[in-house]
Length: 92
Image 1 (cartoon, rainbow, N blue to C red):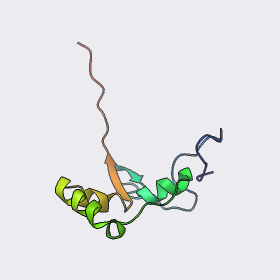
Image 2 (spheres, rainbow, N blue to C red; image 1 turned 135 degrees about the vertical axis):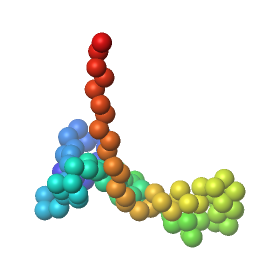
Image 3 (tube, one colour; image 1 turned 90 degrees about the horizontal axis):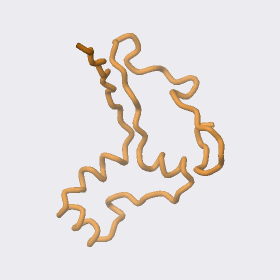
C-alpha cells in the first residue's frame, strides 16, 4: 500500500511501515521522515533522476551559479524534520 501510483484511486497509507522503529520514542519530540527525491519519483512511477555528477557541464555550471548545487545534493537523501506543536490561541 505504500507504493500506490498516482491516479489509481487507491488510498495511500500514512505513518511508519510495519516493523519500523519509531525515532525519538518517548522523548516528546515529534518527527517526520521526508523521503529522498528518488523515492518520491519511484513511488509516483516517474523515471529516475540524474545525479549531479551525471549532469552536463552546462547544467552543473548553471546549478553552481544559482547556488542550487547544495540543495540538489540535499534532496537526494532522506532526512528527518521536527514537527513543532502549534499552541492554541486563547480568546479573551
